[in-house]
Image (spheres, rainbow, N blue to C red):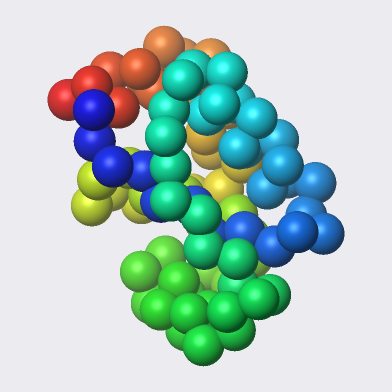
Amino acid sequence: MKPVEIYTSPLCGYCHAAKRLLKQKGVEFQEVDVLMHPKRKPEMIKRAGGKRTVPQIFIGTQHVGGCDDLYELDRQGKLDQLLAA
């Protein structure tokens, strides 16, 4: 399984929803809380192509996007493939 990294904030409902989906699928992920580690936010913005909102989700080296993007991949049946590839 590819490594998964998610940039989050503890006050973000979308972050909680994205993490919940990953946990339901049994996916381990590395979480970067940009509220607790604000120096990591510029890194997130650069990796996400200028996107500043959380969550920003990466599977391997691929930028998935945010929570809605993650759920859309799952609805299309592409999330499991991406995780396993």
